[in-house]
Image (cartoon, rainbow, N blue to C red; front, side, top):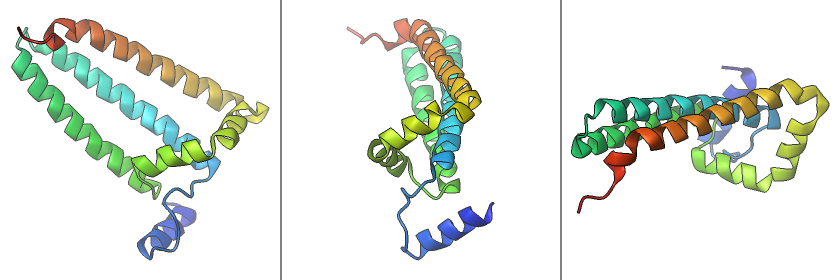
Length: 141
């Protein structure tokens, strides 16, 4: 843990700062880690759909378990940055211009490409999940 994060954690515990007080660099680091986590989650959902063997009830139960598991991972990840998923989203809304400008700056071109690749990967996994789970997600009649 960096000194900065330690100080933020202490201030948060004392109620002296807002959990949404992220630096732009921290926001993008967290964004990248959130995308990695999202890719892992969608991969787990794809695996669950493929292993369900047509058993909708078992698939839905496994899918719920995956949701709970990854919600915990997200809380832990955000906690390392002294924030919550809700405050992260709020920060993104409040600082949208600064966030976009940061990523558009020439010195952050490598980060921008990496984030774009991660987003594309998550989108691809979501599409794979839709295909793998299509029959399992149809409502029973």
